[in-house]
Image 1 (cartoon, chains in turn green, yellow):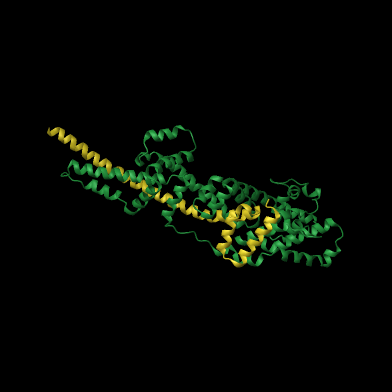
Image 2 (tube, rainbow over the protein chains, first blue to last red):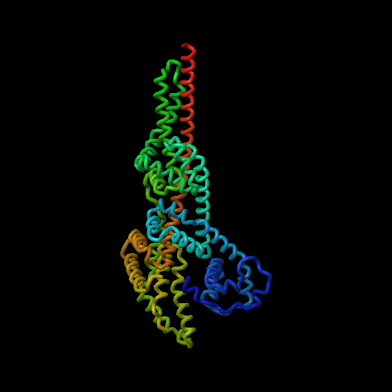
Length: 365
Length: 100
């Protein structure tokens, strides 16, 4: 946003704010806020109002009364988008990012480098701009996060029910009562239960039990055998079968305990068993690698383009240093515009890189 | 904010990877240098991994829920088996008491 943020248009006439307004920031407030005016221009562009967006972005042309009327019409939509982006930012908590990082190796790696608080903030910031640039992509993420949170919530509720079955996993009532006594969060409670279980079984032991249980499913056979026991069965036969039932119950208790939320490392291993260790597939059109190759310019190429710009009759007509600075910012904005419109990931990365580099470059006026 | 000389150097390295390497090389570069990247690039990188992770997390949750559902059903069958066996033992005890 940095370059576009500097591109300021003339002040809004007072008449544009004279009427009764719907909720959200007024046009005057939007234009006084660097970030909001950038978002508003992006939204106008999405709505096919490119000329008006350019007035806002690049200060190209004078505003007329109709422009303010038009902007006023989009204000309600703008306020809704702001609210929606705030809502999704609240949903992307550090805890959610941690859970996901346990399943996605690259996300896990950047979490180690920056921490979950920073990563959730970075994702939220990106989404804040995405809703204005690419509403469909934003909705995809919004719905995905909402659904995932619902699934987590449903699992948390069931976790509470499951805890009652922990005795089967070898966790005694006393141990469980001790954990409950600490008055800690559900997540911490689950973590302690996992730790107890891991201490007893070892992670490999737990995972082996899950594999074994999924492969053998002895419960149905044990139930059938119990039902089939006839009058000729001895106490020894019954005791032997009861022992098998108890063993299988204990194994199953371990399996169910491993599905509790909160221990991301164990959950990750369970996930790998469920997925059969298949790596995620990433769609090529999302990546935009080929696009990025074409779009990314070297520092020398950018300087060369600026020197060419300075030779144009339009630039030569500019007299004051302030106007020259504005022309430079406009040049930078236009240079980035084609790559800004691309939606591929690498194209976005390249644009961000180029913009940051240009911010630090020395463009002589 | 990344100091300009560092940024310039990173930019050159990334352009080189982009032009001469593969998608995987470029991805690895971004992960390895994450802390040094400008914030706008960090946002794009973090968002992409989050986006990929979202689909995986949803599938994972479905898998866990399915595993748990199967487990709870199995637990019900084992409980039923245990009840049958314990009833048989009790019956045997009662019959023993009556005979003796």
